[in-house]
Length: 489
Ligand code: ARG
Image (cartoon, rainbow, N blue to C red):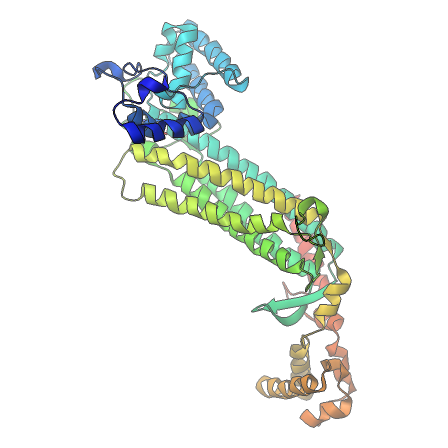
């Protein structure tokens, strides 16, 4: 009842109610909270309710909350803490609540603060007294830590799948163009010729490390907080191994104080997401540059581009630009949660309720960025001719010339570097590329130069010669593609 709930704070109260309205929550009950209101004579002020409630966002953890409650109830039955009849009633009631939430018929209440109390209150309305026994030997503190961990774990699993798919798409691109030449850059200046496949495989390495970070984080976080109760454990003879196992955890968390106050798993999730988003943004930036009229290295598909409302010729790489930007909010979430957690005394403090929105937003945007990059990579066409034309420009085989002077004429590398520099200056003055210089012109820089030098000046020979492990030679690139296929199979 909005008019009533407005209370004494006129202007700001209105704003709060407007905020709640935007968040889709309704003010409901103004009497003392039925879950913890025993010592309270009156219900909270509207503003108190607004700052306190998390139901507007933590309803996203409804299925995790019910899974946790089901595991807890089954354990209470197995240990004889509750009788089997109550446990069965609770189990059926929880399933009904879940179907109501999934069917969108559940009425979430701000007065009931969060998902935990919303579920429990509905359970009470459905099954009566046994609902009140569900909270035996647990607290919202271990409950929220468990729910949130389950939610984050689901996201890590989704990221695992998304990364595997993106890596597969990159491997396809690499395989198709294992020997297509293109310029390799340092300082975004043409450096040495490389292969398209090699460049794609660089991202496979990055996303491969992201995948391994996802898996490390999942393994480390997979300890169950449930049963830590408020902070100290419980005097009830609970079986924490049983609930841990039921929820797919490897073991129960070993310290109850840590279990309810730890949010490392959320921070590690955000850290992993941030690094991956940084990789995505670097690739996105390359796609923006490569798809420009000046580069024309790639053609992005219509499906992942947009047009301009005023310039009919335009095809904009919006998906790549947005992926490039996502790292900002994802890394922002990581920073925000670090700041929430720093300096908090053990154990639970309400500050920690500020963990979820950051993680939810980061997870949504990370998944979206991964999916969009996956689609772009699958759809994009490398412009083989443009890549090849650019590969030879900018004196990109100058290092090959210097290496030839060392290998064939026995020059010290520093001298070879100097001789090559002279020839680059000459070619620049002549307005031609290195292979266009005549042998006589070559000899002005060093008398010993022979015809054989022209063999190393082509980009094809340049890349083929880079056979060192991890080098850009097509044979090396194919070996790396095979290695990754083996890893992923
Ligand atoms: N909504 C709370 C959160 O998200 C749940 C835990 C509340 N515990 C408490 N003692 N107030 O953190």
